[in-house]
Amino acid sequence: MAVQPTTDALRPPLSREAIAERVARLPRLPLAVLPTPLQACENLSERLGVRLYVKRDDLTGLAFGGNKTRQLEFLLAAAREQGATIVLAGAGTQSNLCRQTCAAAARLGLPVDLTLLSGVKGRLMQGNYLLHHLLGAKVTVLETDDWSALSRVLAARAARLRAAGERPFVLDPRGPLNSLAAVAYVDAFLELEAQWESADLRPDAIYLAGANITPAGLALGARLRGSPVVIRAVSPVRWPEPRAVDIAGIATEAASRLELPVRLDPAEIDVDEEHVGDGYGLAGPAVYDAIRLAARSEGLLLDPVYTGKAFAALLEHIADGRVPPDSTVIFLHTGGQPALFAYSEELSAE
Ligand SMILES: *Cc1c(COP(=O)(O)O)cnc(C)c1O
Image (cartoon, rainbow, N blue to C red; front, side):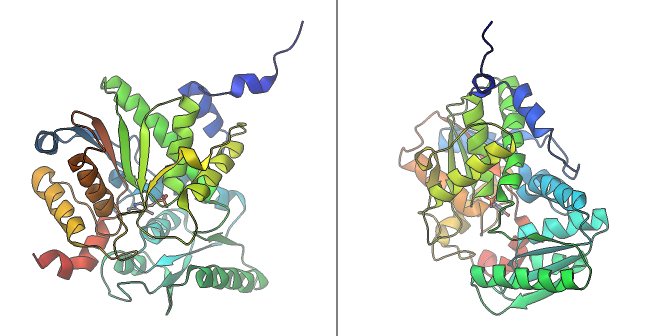
C-alpha cells in the first residue's frame, strides 16, 4: 500500500491542535499571563460604526506587560538551554523590549547588560529608561541612532564577555532569533482565533503596531489556519528596505522552526508605512488625538511610539472606507504604556 507523503498532512489548513503540538516542541518558559483578554469597545464601536474589539497583549503581566513578554518565553528558554550566564540586549532608551527583557531575566536570576541608542528621548529618566535601571540592568547609552552600530557593539561586548569566561545570550533586534520570537505570535494567533470563535465573531481585520516579529507570527498563524482575516501591521519606523520582504522571511523561517514546509510571500504581508510620521518615537497631532480618544472613550491607554500610530491608522482607514462600515475589527494592543511618561510634555500640550 502506498504511504502518504508526510508533507501532505502538513499542508495548511492545519488544526489548532496540530499547530499547538508543534509549538509545544520548542522550549518555553511561562512568563506571560495567558490568555490575554479579548474585550469589546462598545463606546468606540458606536462612535466609529464598526464592531471594535481589543486584544489586550498590554496585559501579559510582566513589569507592565506588552508583546515582548510572549516572545521572551521562547527567547529566554533558548538562553537557559544554552546555559547563558548573562543577557545582552539593545534598542532605544525607551525600549519596551529591554524593559520586559530585564524583568524576565530578573525572574531567571540572570544579569542584563543593555546597550541603548539615545533616540528621541535621550537619557530622560522616565518611562522605560527609568524601569531599565529599577530592574537592575547595567545600562550603556550610545550617542547615535544607528542600528548597525548597535549590532556591532553588542557583538563586541559579547566577545569580550566570552573571553572572560561568561556565556552571553545576545538579543540583537536585527538578529536571527526573530523567527524564534515569531513562534510566540503563531501561538497568540491560535489563542485569539479560539477566543473570537467562542464569542461567535468573524473578524475582517486585525490592526496592530508591528515592526517585524509580531506581524510575521500572526501572518504565519493565519496562513497555517487558512484564515481570511486581514492582518494589517502599522509600522512605527521607516526602514531602508521594504518591510514585507523581511516579515515574510521571518514568517517562513518560523515555519521551518515548526518543521512546516510553508513559505510566505511578501505579497501576503500587509504593512502600512504611511503612519510613521516624522520618524521612530516622533508622533504628530493625529496620534495624540487617537491616544486621547481611546483614553476618554474606553479608558484604554495607548502610547505615542507604537500603538497610538496604529490606532490613528485604523481611525483614518475607518474614516476613508478602507475599513468598511459594520466591519469587525480587532485591535491588537501590543503594550508600550510606560513610554507615555516620557512624553508628558507632548501629552499635556493640548
Ligand atoms: C516592539 C513593539 C512592537 C513591535 O513588535 P514587533 O514584534 O517587533 O513587530 C509593537 N508595539 C509595541 C508596544 C512594542 O513594544
